[in-house]
Length: 309
Image 1 (cartoon, rainbow, N blue to C red):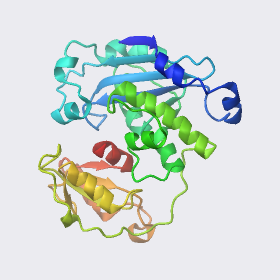
Image 2 (image 1 turned 90 degrees about the horizontal axis):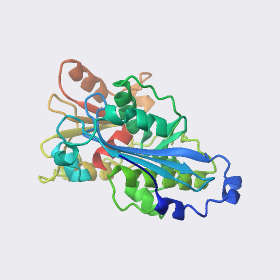
Image 3 (image 1 turned 60 degrees about the vertical axis):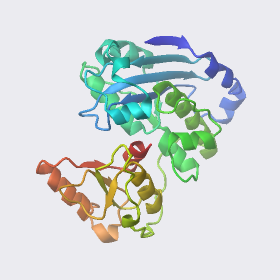
Image 4 (image 1 turned 60 degrees about the horizontal axis):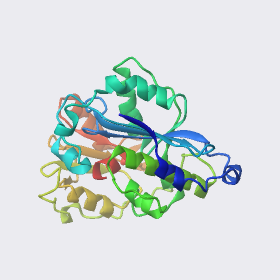
């Protein structure tokens, strides 16, 4: 675990002067930019393997860093090692989350927390802290949601948005690099919008372009080869983009939910089709099968973006 001032951050933040803050008073002068690397996507089962918290202090231009590799006491899947470079050998002699929890809680304090896909990071932080009897009541800002509202991009992976914002991201999928980039993207998006309200006005519902899922063969070298995925509802990306990303991961795209389905991605639903419940027939079938004991993961768009990220 390391506490230190990250001089590289401070030097690149020098232009955030009092004049800047006066022009953009909605940006917090102090906040924590946080990222966690994990063994998977389910906070109820998977564990944190690395954390980084950057204390952005725009008044003092001093930005201390908390970072730690975490021993999750479970094996890190090969696909996670491939994504992050973090191996089981790297973690075996590290502290557990319980060992660093009090220090991390003290470092965060009561400052607002910024994360890229805050729902994901909050879920894991809440679960890990709950295991040691700690409750975080900090307010979260989602840099991903803010970026979606601010920028019109082909996708909203952190690397894509960071490049658009001219924000360096030299070690993607490592906690410190992602946390630094998330904090900077948050500020760039806020300046573009003129606020930090993450609620995006709903777009008029438009039917999918009707991309043929059969045209996208799964990549046999992909990390999730042999698993299947189904989509329901509208996403901010086109079906073609979603199908291409899923197929690249090795996922076989199906039109309907079955006992063999591994993932169901749920987007914005057309009320004229699904009725007052707002739930599609595919989601209803998936939830029924889950209740019967079948392992189907239901993802929203943010979680799908993490999966293909």
